[in-house]
Length: 209
Image (cartoon, rainbow, N blue to C red; front, side, top):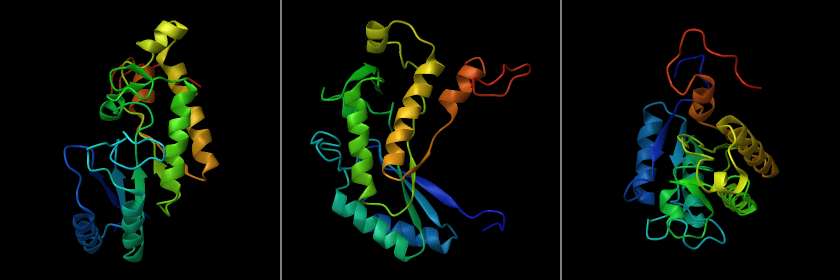
C-alpha cells in the first residue's frame, strides 16, 4: 500500500441479480487481503435484513443479521475493515416495488416524510449490530428526479439542492445517533452547483452554502 494512504479498499456490488454466498465472500476477502487491501465496502441497496421490513430484500437473497455479523467478524480477524454501503434516497426500485415505503418518483424515496426517516433509523439500528466499522456509506447518488414527483404534489416546487441538503442533514443526524460516520457519493451535490453536469466547467458558480 502507498505510504500516504491508510485505507485501500474495494466496493463489492451485491445489488445486481444474486448476491454472493457468505462462503464465497470470505474467500474473496482473503484474496483481497493477500493483494494488500484492508477495507471492503459491501454495497447492498435492499439485499440486507432490516428489522420490521419483511419485504426489504424479499426474494433477493438478502443477508441476514447473523450473516452480516459473521462476515464482519471474519473480515476483522484477517485485518479487513468491512464497511456497510447502502442507499438512503434513490436506487431503491426493488424495495419500493412492494408499496410499503413512501415514493417520490422512479426509485426515489419521499423526502420529508417521517416514515422514510423511521425506515432509515431502522437501517442504521440493524447495521450497527452487525459491523464494527464506525463508517457507513449512505449513497444518495443519481436521484435526478428528487422533488419532481409526489413531493411536488405535496409541497410544490423546490430547488433540488435545498431538498437534498435537508434530507442529508436528517440522515446524518440519524447516523450520529448510532455513532456512525457517514460517507456519501457527491454527484447530486456537485451537479446542481455545476449547471447539471459532472465535468468541471470554466466560470462555475459559487458552491451553495
